[in-house]
Image 1 (cartoon, rainbow, N blue to C red):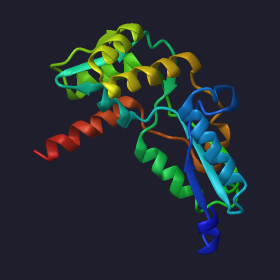
Image 2: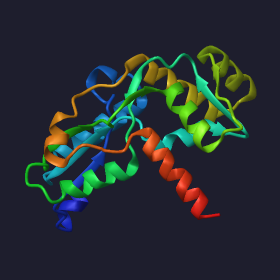
Image 3: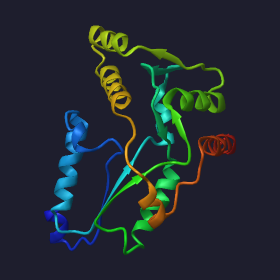
Image 4: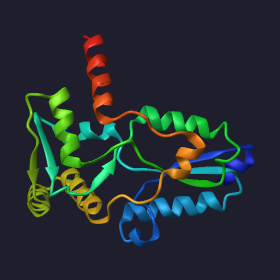
Length: 199
C-alpha cells in the first residue's frame, strides 16, 4: 500500500472470501486474508474488497488422474460464481463511485453443495468419471503416510469449508454492480462449446 501511494495508485481491488471473518481467524488462510484486508483499509488508497464463494472454475481441480474425489460429506451449499461474471463485476466497480472503500459479498445465482456441482461437472465434461467420496480422516491418514502435502492441504481446506459454510449477503454488491448471471449448467454448456471449437 505504501508503494502504491508512492506511485499515485488510485484504486486497490482485493479478492478475499465469503468465509473470511474474525470468528474464522483460527484458520491460517483466513488469518492471512484478514491481515491483508486490515492493511488495505489502513493504506490510504480507495479500495474494494470482494468476498466471493466458490468459483465454478475450481471444480476442475477435483479431477485428477481419471478420478474425481470429494472429501468428507459436503452438505453445505455454496452460491457458485463464474469467473466471467466476477470479472464483469470487478470491472464495473472501477466505474462506480459507490464501490470504493467497500467490502462486497458475491454469490452466484444458485446454491449447490460441492458433490452436486462436481457431479454436474463430470456429467458435462468428463462423462467417463463418476465422482467418489473420501472421508476426511482417511484422506488425512493417506496424506501423512504417503507424505503427500498437497492431499493433506486439500483435505484440511475442505474440512474447513464444511465446518464454516457460506456467509454474507450479496444484496449490496448486486445493487451496485449487478448480479452474477451464469448458472452452473449454463457455464458448463459454454465449456463444452469451447472444447468443441478448439477441436
